[in-house]
Image (cartoon, rainbow, N blue to C red):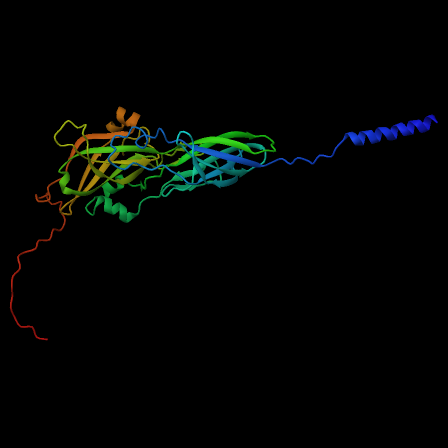
Length: 349
């Protein structure tokens, strides 16, 4: 009897234990990550702050798509990537790009940049330390047009590597980002800022009425940026070419306030590079003559205006020669039309 009771107790305990449990589905870990990138451009000199001349165009910094790169922190190799394009504005008016990224839990380096740029090129993106932003060199025909057919080889070699201006590249970095196991959406919020400098260049001009177009070339600049670790390259140095605008500067204490000026983008000025920091203005006057002017920017880059506000204000006056006066042999072919002379005769058909 005792053995039978013991067996009954065991069966009852088993039934009770089964009644106290309920089956629950296994929870699957989620791999969904939500990315939100705020584009902060509130402190970009000569674009959104420290604008010296508001009468000329400034670079535009907007984006409709960003590329999200996920790297292995141990060897910096690319693991995965995605593009995000959901665009909105936050309460402060900043652009915000958002989207999803499917990664498992772990530790990652994340690099994000605006993908829709026209002139800035990206290379070596499979490695975080090697990824490079750069611009192409201008064509030989464009280079010749900037210097004119009378430019010497020495003058052209002085500006050997002339590249297109880079577009503003806004970049966000999150290094050693730990993603824990999760069963809900994890939101990663980060901020992108530009890696490009914008300078304002101005030179005083006499005889502005004789000029039709003007271009400038500035050398001694960085040609690219390894923007994973944010390291600007210095060798070889490069130059950028851009168009100048006619304007006036009311801050000039002189009757003639005419200036040629522009804002231009660059990967940055190379520190201590003094031998090739020059500016060349190529001005085509009304008669079709090409006039060139060259000056050193060494001292200008050392001014407080240049260092603090990226203003390159040149006090020297560039005088554009009157096309009606001999330019000392520097003029090109200038056709002359005489008065009509009436002639009579028979034409045999």
